[in-house]
Amino acid sequence: MSVLILTHAACAAHDPGPHHPECPDRWRAVTRALEAEALSTLPRAEAPRATHEHILRVHPEAYLEAILGAAPAPDDRVALDADTIMSHGSIEAALRSAGAAVAAVDAVCTGPIRHAFCATRPPGHHAEPSRPMGFCLFANAAIAARHAQAVHGLTRVAVADFDVHHGNGTQACFEADASLMLASSHQWPLYPGTGAPQERGVGNIFNATLPPGADGAAFRAVWEKLLLPALDAFAPELLIISAGFDAHVADPLAQLRLTETDFTWITVELCALAARHAEGRVVSVLEGGYDLDALSSSVAAHVRALMLN
Image (cartoon, rainbow, N blue to C red; front, side):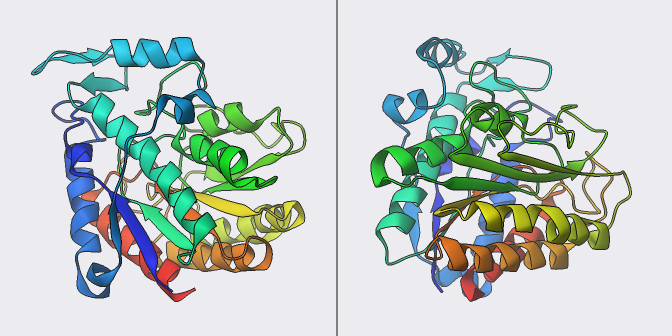
């Protein structure tokens, strides 16, 4: 199966500064992975800018205006919090990152392509409706979900999030709306301190916690026993993946012990679920992953699985 790759060179112009883990080299590492071997033949599209209409389906107008107004001058930076730093190129990168997710929804909902991967940054799953955090400015996956509902008439959209950190932003965007679902596995305890199993929203939030040191067997168990059955019961018409690869054993920001084979496994399982309920429609958006070699090889494994399933 072909996979549409959406990306843009502006993603390299978002530069939080020296030694920041969410660095431009992340985008370059992912790009190199996608240029290798069979992946180089996949169709490409330039990520468009998200419009204000797209963003305002999730974020209040005052928030959008505040983010746009915070853009620093060239050669300057501004800290929105201790972790979330904007450079002069950050707005363009964030608009392209959210726009990629929107365009990916359009692509898989209109066909013939059914799988898309957004090779963009900054990530989005920590951005709450009115608060940037965790390296994130706009809630890309949530923006994509709302676009699918508003433009394509879908009534049930789910996000499956296997980033090592809980997607508190996606949860905050979804937790009051039963037409949306979040299924998340993540290390606990760990930043941002949310994602306890008892956080259930309106019965549409499913959080599975993993202790530091948990390996692929433990990861697969929580998906097999809790998260995949919950997704099956919800029967989404579109599946969005928050594809974070910082649960990799080599990642410096957490202590899970996953490998590329685990990311392949969960991708295969999620594609099968989308085939059962969503006519195969899968949109994958890049979230975390901070060891460059592990990020590159994990993205390659994930996209190969999207191609083959």
